[in-house]
Length: 188
Image (cartoon, rainbow, N blue to C red; front, side, top):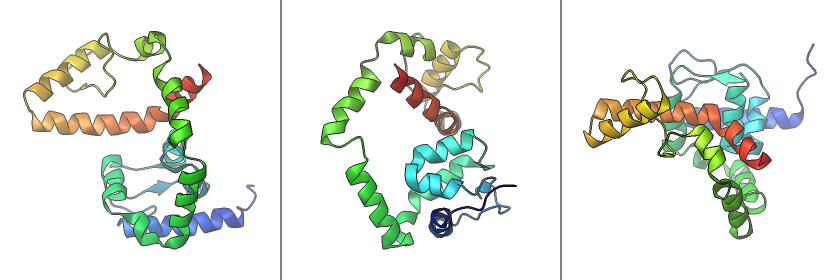
């Protein structure tokens, strides 16, 4: 039997539910964009680690959603954080002030770790052009180079349906791969 969660988990859940409600997202609801929570530790993890914690929790099966793109769109466009209240805004401000690695001192280190890795890592995970964005697989592509070619052709043709599919695939790929790539780049 699992040990009961701490007061911090309870508080994080309370604010998480307010944030989700402000974005018209229900927990374990029936709409495609509603968040299906499988592990109550999700709320504290998201509060502590933000979008990275949210993405890693998805990879670990803590939550899922039928329409992830709509869920994320509602979270980003609903300005839910501003509607939650000053305690969460204060925590986020403190986090960005004291933990944010993109500050003046940390930005250089992050840039070195991310971009000065050499070509080996990028060559292993990207296509032959080293395009650092999502590919388009619905056109029958069998390998990454073909999928990237299909994406470039769709963009050049201004194919709205293909562009929307590319955006949805990019979001899914980002949620599924952001954590492992960050960990891999830190290990190098």
